[in-house]
Image (cartoon, rainbow, N blue to C red):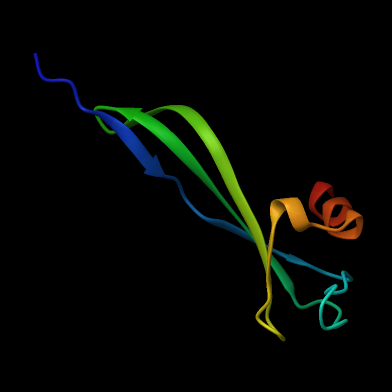
Length: 80
């Protein structure tokens, strides 16, 4: 029996953080958060979510902030 098992990234979701200031360039409303789940799949059917990669990018200075670097202001805006 052949068994097809592996991992595959899911669909990217983006969200613009309104009224949040970039900690690097101090511009407001320029941060966009990207979330992308990574799934374990069996026969190309997603079975389990392994992790959820999340990062924010400033459209003004192009600085990228990973989930561990999110400020409390960024985390509050994401939870809303």
